[in-house]
Length: 390
Image (cartoon, rainbow, N blue to C red; front, side, top):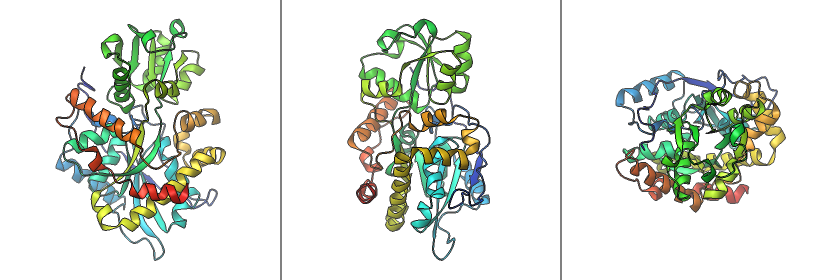
């Protein structure tokens, strides 16, 4: 079975940027992110960049187009912003993954570190990788499912830490299947899942680890945003997707949570990291900046981990267009329901999982050869940040 057959990357650039005030309530500009992003943005992680699956790296003209868009927004990296602060730039998705950057701004963490960070939100996770490769962004969040195909085709990227980890795919079952609690029990059932995303790729690896095959199920490509309607129609036995759509299905009475994200992690030992990356040239030329940034990132990450009430407040205050009309319970479910912010270091489990993804993509002919995962990594900055911050 080919991943994302007939599904090609959308390289249309939907660039939006924002600046946060140093503290909440300082009157800084609110984010201008538009409505809740479509299902092929996050998340994929995932999801956060999964749209590279089944596609090729962008051509030179696409690099030029992106560079022009970023340049017009005034985002050329490395320019002096002021005598006291080093200006740098970070690309994130127009999604809840933007929370660490938002906290870094809102809580003055970047400012205290002597950084002025220009945060750019892009409508698809794969666009963050494009911006990084174009040399217009210095740091970015990238999902392994997006990074590995790009690196296999020659892209030069250095992974210096992680944003978070945790598989957030959930299986929501129909009324007739609500008592089924294992994947084996769903054999022969019609299950909707969005092909070409990180959640989909990891699900396929989970099947392999459990001795199951895609042919054991009737897997159907279904956008996460279309899952509530599909479940309401009764045409699916279940769907595998992410928040907030899964909560909306359950709240509306269209389905029941049969297998949680934690269940998936436990049954197959899934780590599912979202990576923090930069260009190798920056690591070589300005290690001080990279260390300062990763340490500040870990401080913001730890704040998200340990201050849930304030983090939810920041999300709704600074990223209101992302949170939309979601209630606080749903926001918490998205931020903390299966996503963990306890470390900035990619552990061996995550490294092994990247190798599993690489092997799977090669087996599916998405990539021709597996990249050297170890060569992509430099955890020295993250290890120091973790030791200093805790």
